Image 1 (spheres, helix red, strand yellow):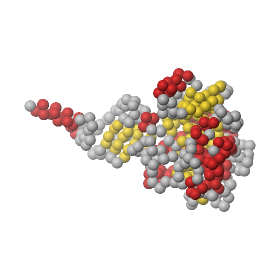
Image 2 (cartoon, helix red, strand yellow; image 1 turned 60 degrees about the vertical axis):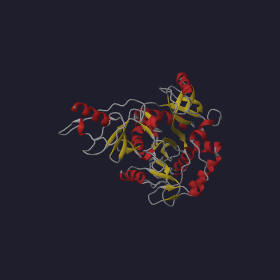
Image 3 (tube, one colour; image 1 turned 120 degrees about the vertical axis):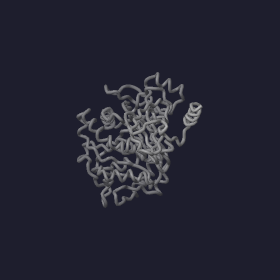
Image 4 (cartoon, one colour; image 1 turned 180 degrees about the vertical axis):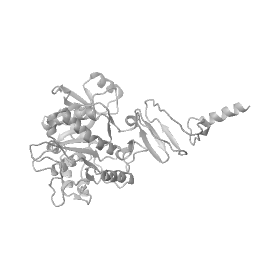
Length: 404
């Protein structure tokens, strides 16, 4: 696992960054600092959703990291000028966590030899401090004078179409390079009360980007219908692209207490033997807890010093914030002691004699194809340990009726 900084030189380059101050470097940042407990029973405060298996054998964190390379390659193909960007190793900011499941996932990352750098928060303080710490780490890892472009992505998002995502990133990087705080907005396909919204303004160029007029709260059903009909309200994806210096200036302007606490915690941080940076606990404990939206973005559109741009992105995106979004078209599978999700066109096997259950945790009808194999395939060969639909009782009654 790559080091945040080299021992003995807190401002030394960690490799893979720009060689000159005029060459733009890009720092991917994975925001994995939340407790993420809304996917119970899978996720709990000590086993957050970004560490659990929701897609195949990978956790959400691993899935997000695996999509980054393909997405940035797509971004460079979309905009040839973006080929001048130097892509740094992903920076993961997360809480210190000794939960065995989390440690297992991190050990897998180390064994994969994938260059990933870690910043560890002693406690969760929401996304605004996390992005602030990431900006400080990004600037400390490049040559003096460079101002890296941060691509901040929550670890609990699913992105299926990396080509569309790469195209959106290319547009976002262009606007962020000119000093805007850019968010990827999702044009809604339905009236949904589960997302915050962005009220967009005039078009910026010909590739779909719009000025941000206002960030708005999650609406009630009636207001969500009006947002959908209006056409200029987009879902807030929580994905941001911004220069490190622009974010640090914005957080100092809007939330000086967060800026001060994060700077102190980073300045007094320590680096462990694996290269991970541990923020100073006492300093970070003084940091207020606030989200990016509340801390800064809600002032965009009302404060001329904050320039906001929304870039549209919709193909293959889902925020796994709760079961309603995680389970659209997915199956919740219990296989022995394991619990995981299967999405469209995925499959799994059930070994002989292993207790299992398939559930639909969402509202969308779920269809599955079951293929049985073996010498005997009769329904009476199935043992139901817990049958909430009463099929065992019905079968028993049916059998008694036949024997008469």
